[in-house]
Structure formats: C-alpha cells, structure tokens
Length: 187
Image 1 (tube, rainbow, N blue to C red):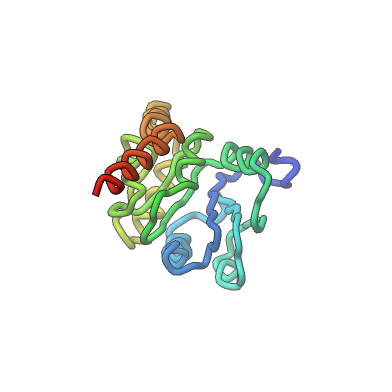
Image 2 (image 1 turned 90 degrees about the vertical axis):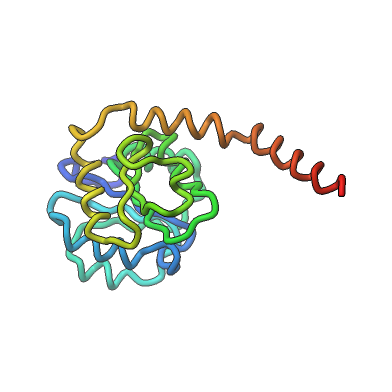
C-alpha cells in the first residue's frame, strides 16, 4: 500500500483528515504551527478530506500527499493502518468519528485536551497523547511522543479499542436513542 502511494518508508507518517480540513474548528492553524517544531525530514503528512488551498502547507517545506475526499472504506482503513499517528486537533467536536476509526485501525491519536475526544482518549494512557488546548508546541510534542514507539506499548491502543467497542457500538447507541425517545414520549 505504501508503494502504491509512493511513500518514503524511512519517514514517519502523520495522517490528518476531516470532511473540511481547513474549517476553523478543525484546528488546522494549530497543526500548521506545530510543524515548526518538527524535523521536517523525518515526517510525511497525508491529508484526506476537502482541502481548498495548500499554499500554507507548501510554505512549511514538509513532504505531503493530498488525497481529497475518500469514499472507499477499505482504502481508508489501509490509510489509517499505515500511519504512525493521526492528528485530531479539533477545537470542538461532537463525536470524533475519525479518532475512533484511527484507533480501531490501531493508529494512536494526538489530540487537544478539553474536547470530546477525551470521551475516548486519556493522555498517554488510552488512545494517544492529549496536548494542551490550542498549544501547537505541545501538539508537536505529542507527534514526537507517538512517533517514538518506545514511549508506549500496545495497551495504549488496545484500551481505547475496548472503550470504543464497549461504549460506542451501534447496538448500544441505538438502545440509548430508544431510551431517550421513550423518556420524552412519557411527558
């Protein structure tokens, strides 16, 4: 799969994706700033989702691949699986679907604390690294921490997988909606 995408296998892969990457609430500004604290020769960024203008990323001098919106779930799973880290620096989030997808593909996440991502992840314990809110330098520290696999073992990601499957599977969510509906109908 890496050969298909012509990926330099010596570089660590940072995956960044969203429906609309540059939407303000996705924290793209902080992601761009965090690149100033990384060794650009060690990393490759793969973007997926709508990306209108890549001039800011070009200025950073880091290798990247822009894939656009992906409808193929098998391709998306492979993309998560080959990545070393998924960055989810949203400033606000309902349910972090991309975070859950990444974790279920065994790829740890770097995220901002004080967001809904903490429903799944716990800093350096479950799922990945929680950077201080709106702190680009700490976001970069998280990318470095995850990229150096000596910092954690498989329990980091396995605990997160268990948490997602236990608390957010479709059967549980459907039952919660039914309970909510029934509680509203009683009034």
